[in-house]
Length: 335
Image 1 (cartoon, rainbow, N blue to C red):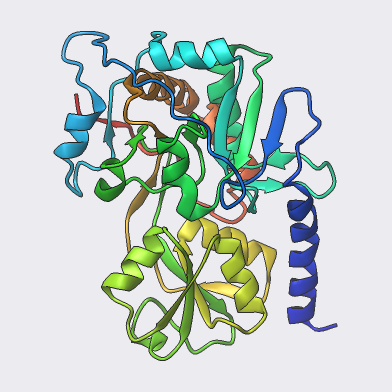
Image 2 (image 1 turned 90 degrees about the vertical axis):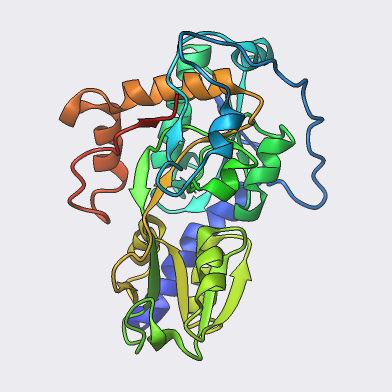
């Protein structure tokens, strides 16, 4: 079997347990429910929370989003440990419902040996749940496609989304974000033998796949470099299309592209990242107290230097594919 065949075989080995993962997990503190989409009834919207002031100089999330500019997009609300209405609602339920990915290697994926969801985003979601609900926190992980992340938050199908979601002004009109927990950028992934060199005119006439609703789709709409753009529900679907010869390249976040290259040795990243993007936790705009609580968790998660939970998670999940990162992004606040 050739290198390409081995890569496809390896991917199928990863995808097999992923398909099985659409069922409910029989774990003590973790449950997985099906992906939001056709045939899945979204939860009824909860009551609109009243904005509260948690200290001098605080402000609700909506005005900050209204003043959003590319330079200030990563700004969020200052952290607070207070139990506001959204946090109290989660405590009353006794569980935190988190929208995640379950097929992105290193970030949110099902381990084929243990059957458990693992990855950098999964570790962060569990840290948030532990802070709100205690050491025996129950987390319900709901698999959400890329283009359903915002609807899931707005319809309160989930309490939050932790799924390599880029913070930008367009999205902040619809959801609230935490401070940034990772820095990435859009990049091109293509076969090593490809004539594609970067996000440039070498894409002309090529079939380029990206996830619907992603920032990659937005960038390709702005400047396609003559490429024929294909969309798929998730980035891993684009990798499958690439391997099957149905696409010539993938445009996705550099962090996700590195993870995909780790899954398939026949592909590689082409050129440098051509955008600057920050990942954040997405929440409902009517839950400013939850935003502040998550930002408090992120402050703790970043603290401790080389021994911080963030650095430990980075070394465990990402360092092999994304070496040279010295620490998490610094938080930015708009109030």
